Image 1: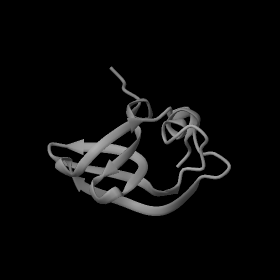
Image 2: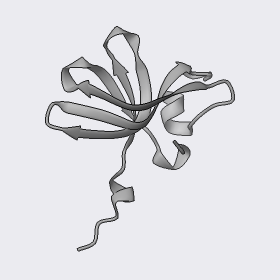
Image 3: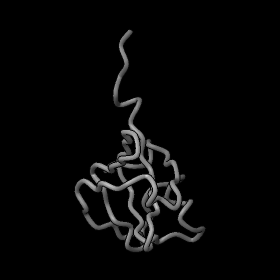
Length: 90
């Protein structure tokens, strides 16, 4: 059976300890996590909180800074928000 890996890709907003907020392609292997094509969300630019980014994608006032690949331990995660992959091109 063929599985298209693009169908398995997850875009997530990750809130880490110390207030770091990233978005990117999410992968997890045991306790080790990583975001590829990651960006720091410096300014949400939304009118309805950070969830609006997950549902609607980048807004006019959103500011994202390139971060490359971000690796972190699962225990440093405060929260994750699943994003509509059709609204994000990283």
